[in-house]
Amino acid sequence: MTDQPALADKVLLVSGGTQGLGAAIVRAAASAGARVVFSGRNAEKGKRLAAEFDGRPVRFVQADLTDPRAAADTVAATVAEFGRIDCLVNAAGTTSRGSLLDTTPELFESHVAINLRAPFFTMQAAVRDMVGRKAPGSIVNIITMSSYGGQAYLAPYSSTKAGLVGLTKNAAHAHRWDRIRINGLNIGWSETEGEGEVQKRFHGAGDDWIEDANASVPMGKLGQPDEIADFVVFLLSDRSGVVTGSVIDWDQIVMGGID
Figure 1 (tube, rainbow, N blue to C red):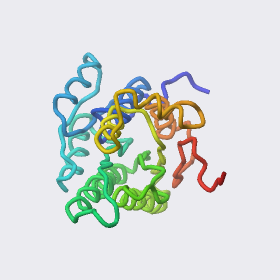
Figure 2: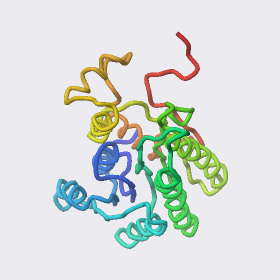
Figure 3: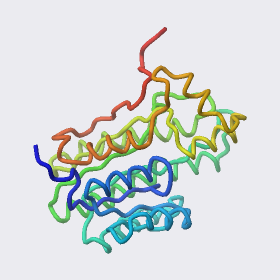
Figure 4: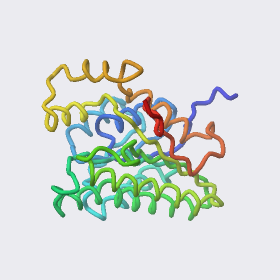
């Protein structure tokens, strides 16, 4: 076992890194020795997070991933800044609500754009750089337990995230001989500022929503972004060995269990 940081000298791009789990991954990866570029739509949040690192190699790139060109552009910005890309985390996502009956074409397309198309073309650009250099790499896609089916009001979200499961496995299989490892995490209910906004907007929750939420789950707390981020760093690093094509349930609900 080496004492070297898990991501020492690695160059990492994190999409959706300005808040919540994405921001936690940026902080964990920087602490693990990585040089980090992170993207997001909100310039104010991005600049505020980048300022936390006080001259360390962490850079913010503003990007709206509903634009098909933005995904490849963020990879190009990473390569321009640090000369290459070694690791990628696709953490950007939208969870806006819609059922089979009330989802509009516009809502469906927004989910496709952010939850599936953006990861596809970000991975495409990153893998092209890795293959072009004949260098190994590691990618982690943040997915969701709702990819198994999800609630009725998450029809477009569940559909596009299920597509990301298929993409993760397809790309992992296609590039295993390039030594590019691609894995995913099915994240369960987690405590983030974004989740708080969703609970208040769509479910009438109050400011104390987290207390009721914690009481409703087996471990007495929702998933914590810093804990998930540590696991993402492990999957990105060489310490996770040869693991590729795995989509891991990171949750306290056991799929297939019946009470």
